[in-house]
Image (cartoon, helix red, strand yellow):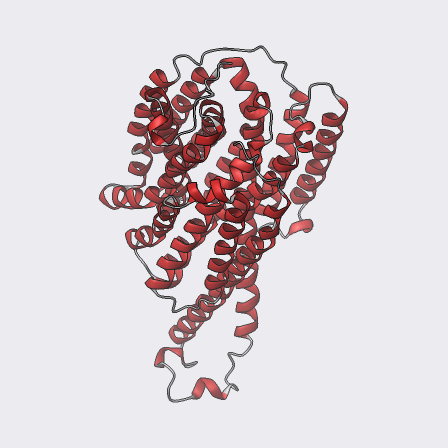
Length: 509
């Protein structure tokens, strides 16, 4: 496979060639394309549920199976890149992703939509790891922080702009228009790929380890399904959950044993012998957990508990993008001067944002939502660039493509798994707190007869009881969201010391 890293004299942005700028543009557009679908689908979920006459459990498969397909297909990136070459893989990946997005908008049934979303996840899986691998192989080490930052603009621009553009299109037309918006971007990305990677067509026949791939895919799929469906099916009281746990554990055992005993495993365990890369994987898992969780939780919190319209929700959570972009002003120099300190700072900022959100109540203001999202995005971008640079700084060039696929696998799997865990916490906390609070709603509770209470909270009629029940449910749900915010804060705080375990960058780099 062709690489174009040049041992040029050190310099800044002015030393980047025209071809490198074109590659940056191509990777950025493709990255934005993939990122938009993550938040667009969450935003239009209520409209899809009503239009397709689906239950909440049925419509959840639209999100769950897309995440599973992405996680399963991501580890194939290294092998596909060797077999097809960079240009062919990126071209057919983006082409398939664009067609799948078009089919999502054209779907007339829940089954067709789910199949299109699975295809969207599978085709989109290589976009981020390939983009990262192309940049790391194309740019010399002294320009890699700059390249990763510019790449990161596309990575955060998509999830931030997705809700804004999607809400405008949905209000003007319907939920299908949100998916149709992706098609023009996909076509633009295909044009960029055609010209930017015209010299990257080299192919290397590599034997594919089907046993390792299938075992890992089954293990990840079962883990995702257990956390996503366990609460609905009453955990181990369900034969389905027991079967998922047993199958997943068996598949994980087969994968580990297989990787340690065959000559050319699907994922090379020798990658883990690199200290920086191993710690980088743990940080990637944590960063994946924190990456999209607030974008997923805030829309339902603001819409269901506070009655915000979709366009207002979209503008408020877009503050995360402002935080990302603000970080780009300082993160390159911070990464060059003190990459480990930059990671610690970024994780600490995200922990602080999490603790701030954990102090919210049902009367949270626009100001709190905006600035907590901005702070979360700022910390995410401050930590991501130095984490990536340090994780790959000691990895041999021949292992970069495989390393980026594993790196992205951990991020994607962390995102999907943590979303399921937080949704589970919200559901269980809401049910438990609603049950405890309703125990106090009796005619013998003198507080309910106090003259200052709203008239609709009296116990004199069915309408009043329903109004009181709805208010209790709102408060119980808010406690669930607060518990999820506490978990976000603790995950970020626990990851802060990990950066200190990584090796410094060599002085000459």
